[in-house]
Amino acid sequence: MTDRTLAKEFGLNPEQATAATLADRHLCVEAGAGSGKTRVLVARLAGLLKPDRCTLDEVVAITFTRKAASEMRKRLRDAFRERANDPDVSPENQTHWRDLIRRLESARITTIDGFCASLLRENAVRLGVDPDFSVLDDSEAVLVRDEVARTVLLRMLEDGHLGARRFAEEFGLRELEQSI
Image 1 (cartoon, one colour):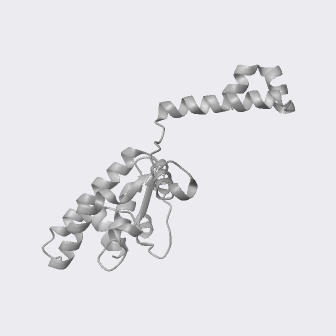
Image 2 (image 1 turned 180 degrees about the vertical axis):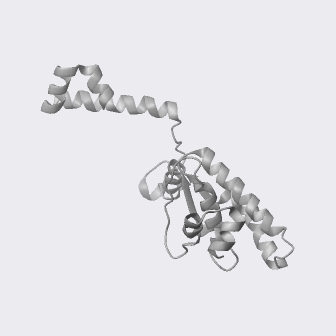
């Protein structure tokens, strides 16, 4: 798939089309909200997943939010469906795109924490981790983080850590706890 083809099909500017077609290396797309990151990644994945290129099992797409991962999946499904229904695409290739649609839910398109959780589950026995663990939701994570910070702070103060003690004396224990 050429830069021009992608630019037209996905509405990419030249820089985005270049990022979407760099097939010989890994890619990290970093840009502000609404800049087209998801569109670039969807175009890249659609290009990589063409018949006789990569398989869905060889691809990992990691985003920061579940909403972004869900949006990427939806856009990929739409792109695959468009190819599967394209009369100019050979019947074998239409079958390829339909297969990708069916298998898309099992693809590694996830958040950072979701990707890490899947790696831990895949290697749970070797790592000595309970494979039925769960990832903390945001509110639980805040509580655990605060508890860990408080425990570490108190241990530092008990151990006579000079920096922690000076900070606590000057700003107070609560301020020190919040800064951690």
